[in-house]
Amino acid sequence: MRLESTRNSEVYRVWLTDDDLEELRRAAGSHRDDLVIQLGGFVGLRAFEIPQVAPKHVKRTPDGDHFRLRVPEGKDTTGSGGKPRDAYLPREVEGDIHRYVRSEDVGRHKPIVDLTESGVRAVVKRTAERAADATGDEDFRHVSSHDLRRRFAQRLLVDRQMNPRVVMTVGGWDSFQAIEPYLNAPTPEVVNDAFEEAGFE
Image (cartoon, rainbow, N blue to C red):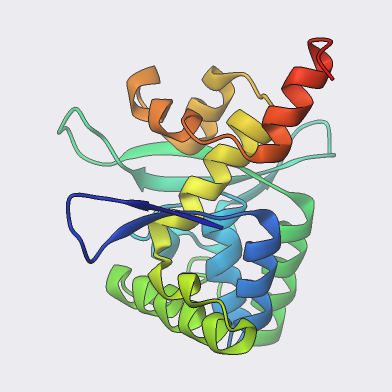
């Protein structure tokens, strides 16, 4: 985990690792709270998008091997209202959603996570506080819901070197300028790998 200062001395951008995400998941107080962490960190949903998705929005692709999660009203920077998109839904997250929906008897048209946007943010903050207590790493106390989405983007763009246009499509970014900040902080491992692949030892 790495903290980056912002103009607000009280707020930091937090660059999480997947290990940090797992610590957050372990600290989650419930299955629902764990899903919030997963939907942000592995599906890339914004805090206001998480309450929108219902079981009916989980779709299997025609090849039968992949899943999408329809976001009815994502962020639209053009100002013309919510913009729908199909987020890539990893199989493991789909399985967790399925188990949660069955155990909680969530109706097909009801929100999977029945919280407001501020409720989602509170879950992330509360879970981060618990992770800080459990690990002794005080940096967790700075984690916000947007940092989960930041990890999602960095994993795809930096760690996996995925085509930025694909990331823009599944993550709901309208321009290269919008995703450029996520390219700024490769992990030390990514730097090492890049130089090794280029023939430097």
